[in-house]
Image 1 (cartoon, rainbow, N blue to C red):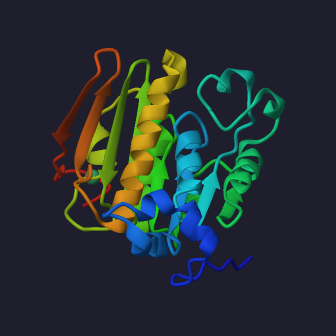
Image 2 (cartoon, rainbow, N blue to C red):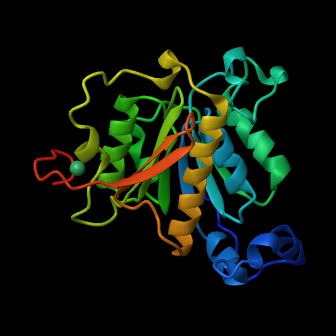
Length: 255
Ligand SMILES: [Zn+2]
């Protein structure tokens, strides 16, 4: 199915009202909304991080959002996965998210894939401007990192566990930049998921929102981003700090 992105230069009166509060911002203006309307983000994972990311991106002015997840909505999800209600339990996530986002913004082009992301499906990233990793385990994150290096796409990674979270921007579209594997190649327990340890719902909202924020800044090229940096968030003590990530010259993925 061939889907056309919205016309870059023809914002309707409806658009001007819908995006008014963004248009008023010096860093976005009408031009920023026109640019966003041509952009395509691939979002992998529709859980605690993916729900707020999808919700905010849907009303940002973005042209196209691809959503990838093969999960069914369960009653333990509702605590933090804010796009779902009790009547959605048992339904699949991509269909439910598509329906919710369409009620928020009927102009958004949505492409849904009810699959578990793997290298076999990595061609879904081909025409993306940017990829957001909102999954919850090391092995899938590692595959997404590899796929974004293959297709040269910027990657925004987020993670949340218990009361601590992380966000990073990896410029896998550029050479000589650190990748996710440079940072985590040595982690032993690659099957570990935040769901085994518990997670505070508000934390997933904070991390997801920062991922959505960084994606818009990157697409519109404004501000200082988390490029090659790791933001460490400790919500128990309200402590946010950023550390630099260096490229590992022995990394098997990005060299
Ligand atoms: Zn690397």
